[in-house]
Image 1 (cartoon, one colour):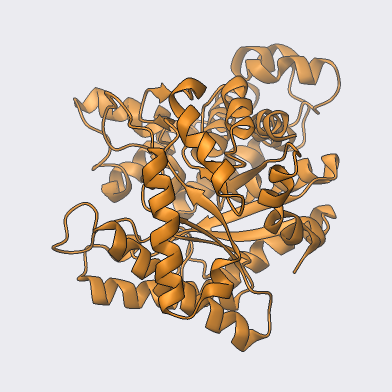
Image 2: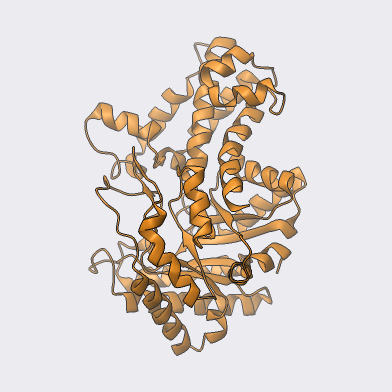
Length: 427
C-alpha cells in the first residue's frame, strides 16, 4: 500500500480526532487533466487521487479503449514524465458495478461487473467505489436497498479474491444506495432531496450485514466512505449549490459512524465556499470530473480562435467545427442528454456543464483536430492581448509570469485553476 493509500484509509480516523482533512478525487481519463493533476500535486507535495469510471475504463476497454491495467500504465507514464512520486498516488475505480451493462438482465450485468472489478483489483487499484444502485433490465430505475447492498458485497468478494490472488494491497471501499448519476443530472432539477440521517445509517447497516453474510467483515472494516446526497448537483446549464443548513442533520450522523466519511459526487462547479463547507461537514472526498474537462475545452476553444489569428490556414478546421462534425457523426454520447431545438442542442453539445463532449476527445478525428491546433501554435509566445481576449481568466497569471504564454502551458493552467479551488477547500 502506498503511503498515500495509508493516509486515505485513515481519513475518517483523522477527522474523528479533530483534524480537518479532505481530498479531491480526479475523475478523468484525459491525459492533460491527469498531467495537470499530477503537476499540481507535485508542486504542493500533496497526494493525488485519480479515479477511472466504469464507462471510461473497464475490462472491455470502455470509451477510452483502456483496461484498468492500461489506465494504470497510462497514469504512471505521465507521473514518470513529470517526476511525480508514486508514493503520492492513489488509483480508484468509480461507480464500479453493472451500470455499463444495465440494459441486460441482472445476472448478466453483474457477471460483467464482476469481471470489471476483478480487472481493477488485479491492476492494483486500491480505492473501490461499489455502485449497484442502478436497476438492470426489467427492474426499474433502482432495485431495493437490500439488493443494492447484496450486489455490492458480491463485487467486494471479487475484489478481495483478486487482491489475495495477486498478493497485493487489499482495497478500501466506498458504498452507497443514493448515488447521483455519473456525469450530472439528466433533466432540469426542480429540487434535490438531501439524504436523511435515517437513510445514511440504514445504508451502513444493510451493507455491513450483506458483507457479513459473505464472510467479508474484514473487508467491511476497510470501508471508509458512504456516498450520500448532500444537496449538490449540476445539469446542462444549472448548478445546485451546497446549503449547509439543509444537510446539518445528515452531517451529524458521522458522530455515530466514526469509521466513515461521506463521499460527495457531482461537486463540479460549486463555489469554493460551498466546497469548504462540504469538507467541514464531513464530505471529505470531493469528486470532480466534468469541470476539469470543461475548463480544458474552454482553453482549447480559446486557443482555436487565437490560432485563426496567429496562424491562419484555410485548410485547417477550427476546433469547434471539427468537434461538431465528430459529435454529429456519433450522437450516442449526447442525444439522450441534450433536448430542445437544434440550435439549443448545438449549444449544449459544446458548452453544457455536463460536458458530454469529453467522451469525444479520444476519437481519432478529434485527436487529429486538437493536434493540428497545437502544431499550428507550436512553442510560440502568444501575445498577452490575445490571451486577454480569448483566455481572459489566465491573463493575470500570464502577466505576472506564473504561467508561460504558450499553448500547452495555458491548457494545463486552465485545469489547474479548478484544481486550486479544490486545494483551497480540502487543505
